[in-house]
Image (cartoon, rainbow, N blue to C red):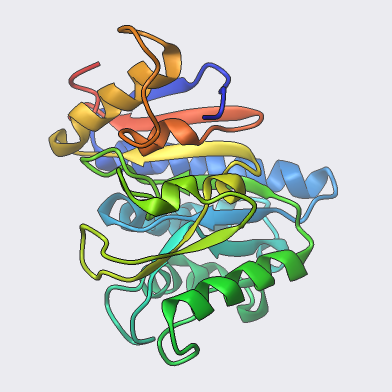
Length: 252
């Protein structure tokens, strides 16, 4: 399990306030990275809160100094489905902000679909090769949601993917959430970052937030087992921020 820096916890009134904070922080970080001469690579997440965040990024982007032609986009995980499926995280992100702000297609690295590869294993291998070929070495920011079971990306409690080592991606079968087949970045890949941000909203996530943060900070006894609380397996190298709304923070 990764030994993290003490995480920063931000509690916002609601999901919209949370999204505004995340969007502002991201735009600032991307601009700073570019000013320092880096081409920032960002790993996006999916889910309801991600959609709110993405639309807020698009709204605030015109006032920022970010050069979107020098931003490279990835996903922490993706559903292995048809390219036009509404289950695809990439489709939502493209519509909500990538196409709006003008990230070039060649800078948007989607996980292969069923139309691209004959199996989820092939899709995972192809995505890993794309990561290696990019030469990025890591992500400026990794954004992650959190499931009610404390899963991150598509790394679920008790699943074999939690124990994958020396690999950037993993094929996931029998996901407890549909669709059953997915491609996920591994802990090794997710932890190659400058900043790790959790985006969590809703009372249904409150228990998972409490378990994950107790596991991180050592509160409440033994350190949590990554096989039971996968969220404790990831951390930022320079910062870890939990962006929460009041509902998801209600058990802290």
